[in-house]
Length: 111
Length: 111
Image (cartoon, rainbow over all chains, first blue to last red; front, side):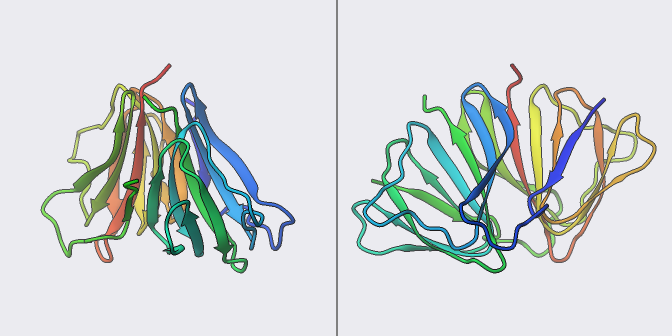
């Protein structure tokens, strides 16, 4: 039986021009991906949002996140998780560049 | 908007008589849970298996896993993930007790 394995810290780059996203498992209504950030943030004036719920875990490194309607950034440290509901507008305002910041994002179709 | 958050290292116990499992997100066909092991293993002569696929990540600590039909345990270190297909018989043969071992298990209905 072929068993798929990997490590979330595998092949971490030094510095990347853009975020790196690797899909680890894709199923109907579900996508699990590793995201590596080396300082990238959401561009000024833009928001991220998606039609899926997104369960995000900060695996390594550190980041700050702003949720639309909140008055302060949220600090994310190793082990922190947050469930971003579908259509929740949010911005990544800071990510630790060195060592790189590693996220696990689990995208789940709502309902 | 109520945003659910947490930390995978929250409230780690000293030593537990049994594994601790907390469901973080439950949806039709999906269950994400944190599991904390403080030395627990699968009892001698028993196997674990389930009707769901199980995507398991070793978040903190260390463990060893035996897959039925393989001749050696697999060592799991921090960041290692493994996709255990439904009905794949496996045994946890060792878990680091101190500091506790933390797993993230994502149970996905196959197909």
